[in-house]
Length: 140
Image (cartoon, rainbow, N blue to C red):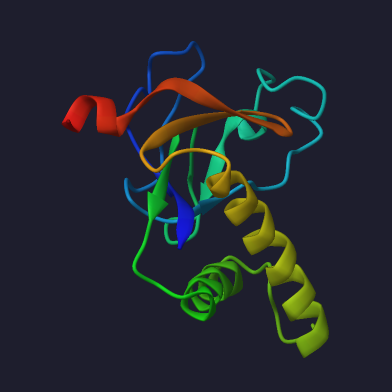
């Protein structure tokens, strides 16, 4: 199944790049704060970052990866990470948790399906773009 993972590839090539997450961890498009809402180069940086599930830290580069997991396993990984970060809690019904996971996993897999495995991505608010090269080009 295709997902997005944190990577250091091309990180630093674009002004404002940063990496605080763990390379290889699953990432998602986190919320954008008021500081960055209208400007991804705002003072926070969340408007150009991918949020890591394990570290709860962000990076400006992600890579499309095909992981040997089925959808239920990916959903559980995302559920675990979102619970640890406090986004999923005991006050939520099973239906609310399911809808939230549908949205988060749906966005990530939708993005991943539109790019080749190995493509490095960057984020600009609600836009996700290719960084212009694929890891396959480097490895091959």
